[in-house]
Length: 400
Image (cartoon, rainbow, N blue to C red; front, side):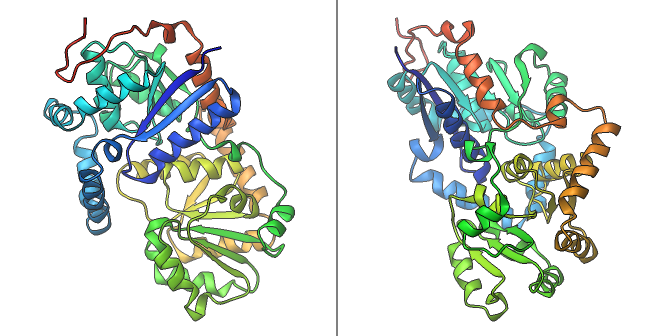
């Protein structure tokens, strides 16, 4: 039997988009050995010299001028990718993207970021007849995601589905599946067992995720509050790719406590979440969804203006987390986990919100495998057989 080929395209502007791409690829592999996936950060792959410079400039802007990022997000909120931007993408990426797709010959293309989504849409306008599936990886739908060439959208919530419909997307081409997470997050392990495996004590545990942002996310008074609970609660600080910061923290006396663990990059976040009773993080779409899959109550520290604000609003309004707006809120939650009441309060609050709010099936019960299963169903459906043997020349014309 011929393997079905799926090309998943993302970009490195925030790690969540690419995380979602790899999570979906792993989920498809888990469901069917007959599916062959390829994940590419399109800009980094096609322009390895220019792309890192653009990415560095983006990160610098987010760090130095987050309000500017938020303003730009709001200004462009209702607008699809402009003709000028599409032309620029055409000049920079189009030729090479067409060559890559013609070489790989995928049966389905999935985009988890608006930029490759716009590029593939342009290719489809020029005659490429490969189905395009777009997975929106936040709890909002910015106008840049919208294109008439997208065959199907998979979205996080019913609210996002309604936003797409308001922007003219056919309701029949939108499916609420939740954001994909790696199959490791499809199951939950016993806390005591996984704590022993990770070398932790069997104590109430708070997982603090700073990632590349580090502890800049947290005000000094909040960090001081963490330290006051060191004898009662086990803290795991995960700094992600910021290994320099993780090393610096390990050498600081205040973090040299038997109940403190400082992590750099790790591939075992699923296990660390299983070991935790509380997740303290910025509201990135992927991290929030992984916490949701694990049933972890969440406290959200300062977010990047724009989509992370929308993520936070969604999770707080549905009872899945709370904004870390004051030391008193942190104090209350640390007290709950030290008394082993956090999970019960989280479940009770979530149930109350679900009873009050008109929610979809997904919001009542997140099914972490649903996105991968939906892709499999679409891949096997009649629309995936529409692909014709049409090649696209770099000029944008069909080959005869």
